[in-house]
Length: 229
Ligand SMILES: C[S@@+](CC[C@H](N)C(=O)[O-])C[C@H]1O[C@@H](n2cnc3c(N)ncnc32)[C@H](O)[C@@H]1O
Image 1 (cartoon, rainbow, N blue to C red):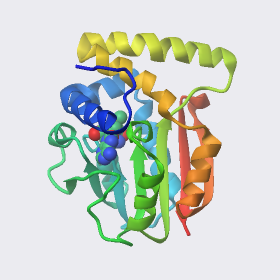
Image 2 (tube, rainbow, N blue to C red; image 1 turned 60 degrees about the vertical axis):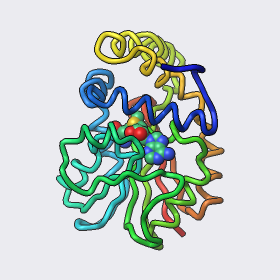
Image 3 (spheres, rainbow, N blue to C red; image 1 turned 135 degrees about the horizontal axis):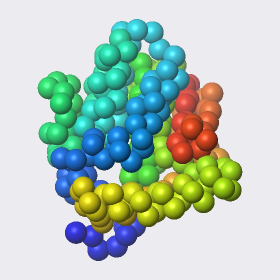
Image 4 (cartoon, rainbow, N blue to C red; image 1 turned 180 degrees about the vertical axis):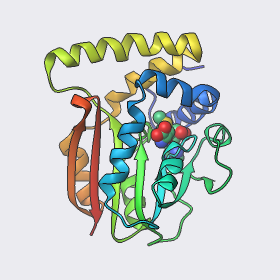
């Protein structure tokens, strides 16, 4: 299925889309198993971090099968999901407001949304600055973003345990229940992520202020929040 473990540019775009199409039937189940259901806790923390009023309109970028969209609606928000994998979109339990759209060229009008969430997708984009500029474009002034990603614990002991789990157990479980190659790519793709300070700088250059970064669950995940200037 895969030619190189970490492709770039157009090759990465095609690879990522095809990979998520192929793992979409079991994606939700494996997410819950592999994160011990912490994925839902982290999504909740991300939504709370937006600090938006009930009824606000949220875009969930790279929505996958729509977990964030479902949770946002249960929390009293209106929410639209966008993703470029038809496989992921078609395996959603949601029947409305999921849109096929590329994060680098979003099919939404300028100043449309009060907030944007994005879960576990930063490392899958071919480039971050054009995505951040698109987010700034589709957000209303003072709109908020919450970008959730995997991370590495800062404590050395925890980091070793995390690496063993992420680099060995995740591909193993993925191989048993889905696609070993895809679940080898997912841990490896963490190396696409620029350093935290570089991401903060990209957000500022793309038109955001109040940028903050925090680690969740002793560093297994990380959350960037910011406000459109
Ligand atoms: C790890 S999944 C995360 C799905 C979902 N956000 C979640 O929390 O479970 C990453 C998602 O990013 C999507 N994605 C990657 N690059 C994209 C792009 N350029 N435009 C839109 N979606 C993209 C993939 O199709 C995939 O559904």
